[in-house]
Length: 85
Image (tube, rainbow, N blue to C red):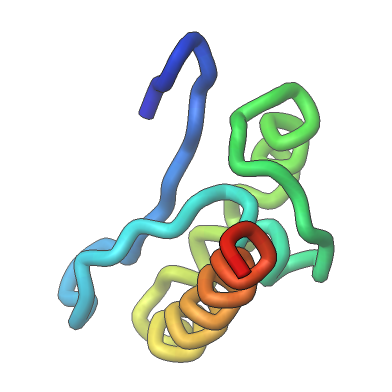
């Protein structure tokens, strides 16, 4: 997705996931590293993606998708609380 000359990358499960939710780069990265970051696809996130793409792909595979989505929804809720109180 592109907004005001910024590039964003979102992820979702393929195949028969129960949800059609998309998750932004910042919460996916937080799941893997514990770091709270930015969702904009900058050089740092591009490098992260380059070295972690297969690990990210594994998170959205059938064996892990339920756990992954539960964790990501929790990170999204925490992000909303940080941003909007």
